[in-house]
Length: 113
Length: 114
View (cartoon, each protein chain N blue to C red):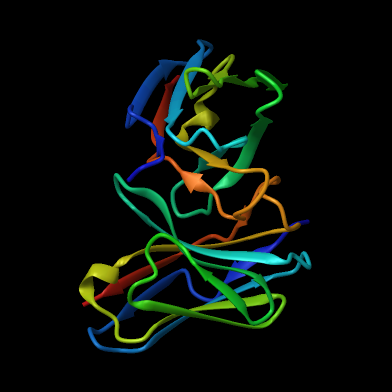
């Protein structure tokens, strides 16, 4: 059963506008969340993370928001650039216990010039 | 700079063959992982290892085995390849013993079993 869900398989956004990618999870034991970006024929690269003690983390154009009560996180990219076009995966883990990450199914972002 | 390398980018094998996928990391990480990525299914964990000679099953270990004889190297073995094992295989590594911290991924091996 998918514990981390990305319900939008794709998203198209105009260059310069905001991209919002969403992710939901079911396991309340998850305490740490990450976003990865993946280009074709490459491995995923880490983008940004957030722990459960925060509700927001910002890194340049990228901001991740966490709503623990709703078990929901989102990634905001402002402003979007054509180079941001990639597949974005959210992932979750517990701060204690298992070392592995649980990944969502990914959202393909296309930024239109 | 962090580096995870995988032995092949593309591999074509026949049904029933034994297949070895190799992964090497140069970051002295304790933890190493094997995932497969399929369209619409995201990344699914096959096996992981938290130390030399130690391994744990992930979500989909059936049909696979692993070997970790040295800290920097983690091998995925398909004992008898089948067509449903055609997929993109991704290796990753991470430091530490807790869940905190990102994983670093290799470029992936696209395996086709005919």
